[in-house]
Image: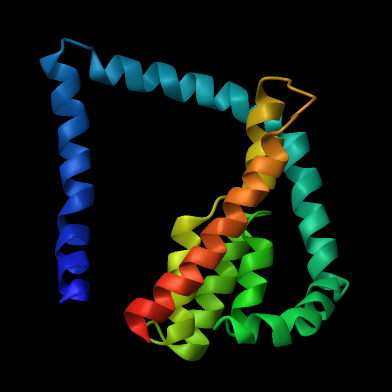
Length: 178
């Protein structure tokens, strides 16, 4: 029942958005194409400014995974997470998601391929992907794009939100799909 409703909403959400935004822009007399091109120009300039931050972060993630530190951390925390209904395999997603959307997508794809999209693990990482954010990526890229050096409360707030998203994903997935 719930899955059918979610599937129906998902089927029409993106086409609705893709039609609604340009039509609304035309309705309120905005030059939609010109606005799009101007935004694309600004996006290119921003991309050039953030490349150093992006490269530094991607190298750091690669070193973290390649060193085996991620595997050691997962192994140490697995007994605790199993108590709350979070399979150990999902921990890699929980740790990489705040760092990298692409890395998290790769882990999610690997887990779904291994365990199946309708498995508890497949569903849990999917919900986790949608309910968390790439906090470090956002700080590095967006703050770097506007030259903000002091993030103040942004990092703790983002990590707390990620933690809540991860725990909520585990609870909701266990309640709905288990």
